[in-house]
Image (cartoon, rainbow, N blue to C red; front, side, top):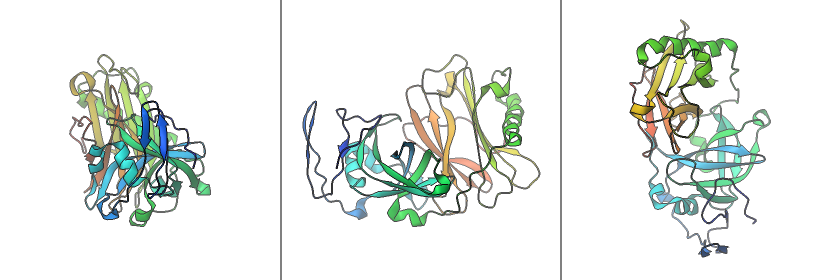
Length: 320
């Protein structure tokens, strides 16, 4: 099997081509010879993980973001052993991962190569391989994923992306204008000018789409040094009873006080099968990004998981 070229992959500047567990291959690197033998692993010792990734042409890459357990999401114990060890235990040649977009199954990735991804805080193992997508999701570019052997445990519906309308975009601006008097941060000349991301999705049983938006004042939505007097607001707004939208989650960070951490929506998936999707967000800091997940309990969104290497959200969450 030929190793595939892969961006953001380290370990001496190479990808490692996957082989069956009993095989061994020797690869020459700039630092010497590396034995990539993968010893057989008792499946009972493996903790299933939730993955996230993006498409690159006819392929995609995935990285693990959290462990899947009875309570939802938790830290990945294997990450302390290093990215290579995790890859050898979880990325067996030909293993498959079920891809989700808009909270539903849309395809499969077959493992072909692995490496280390340093885009997020803490080096993470990265698997890459060809993907197959359902026709209706052929244009999808970002995914959440689980190992295919446990995919049946994740609730799913028909793929039906929610259309982002002008009215929904106006909702995001209205919610931000309502928050500004309570934040104690500088007012922008225009809320539209500082809105840097907006997403919408329709949850199971919802009467109206949920609106998710990121506003950044004094900087941009990127990993890099914090701008002077900069702050970010990540908000979610829902119309749960048909009586109008209300803000249901707020993450307000003043960067020179709380540290830089601009959150943006990545995707959603119902990992605990309670009928409501967990929301996965990327949080962009000064030197790296980290992952957090939100869950809805009793009508209120709260942070259910955060990478141990990430900064906590300083604001009180829930309805303001």
